[in-house]
Amino acid sequence: MAAGTLLPCPNCQSTAVYSVKFTWWGGVLGPKMLNHTQCTNCNTTYNGKTGKSNTQGIVVYSLVIFAVVFLLYFLFFWWTDLASGEPLPLESAAWTAFLFGSSRTL
Ligand SMILES: [Zn+2]
Image (tube, rainbow, N blue to C red; front, side, top):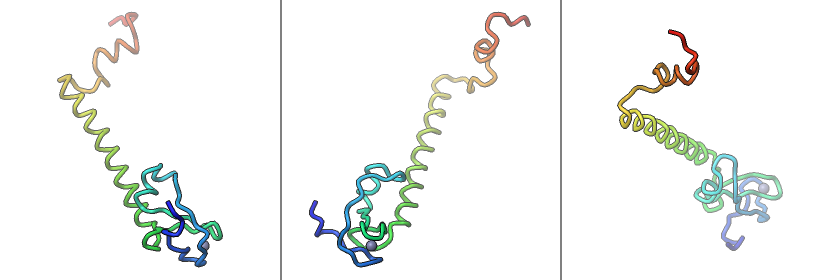
C-alpha cells in the first residue's frame, strides 16, 4: 500500500505516517478496518482515510468483539445444557464424585 494514500497527521501535519498493522485492542483486523494510522513524529494515531480520531471506532470495535465473545460463551453453555438435559455439574453427583472420589462414605 502506497504511503501517499494516507492523510497527513492531524496533529502536526507531518506526512511521515504509517499504517498500524497490529494493536492490542483490535489484533490484526481492527486497525485494518479503521485505517488505523500512526504519526512517526508525534505518535498520534488516527484514521488515515478520514483524518479523524479513531477513539470512537476503537470503543465500538471493542464493544462488538466483547459482545460476540460473550454471546458465543453464553450460547456454548446454553447449547451444552440443552444437549445434556442436565444442569451444570456444579452440584451434580458426577462433580461430587470427581471431588471426593470413591472414598466418599455417605
Ligand atoms: Zn504528528
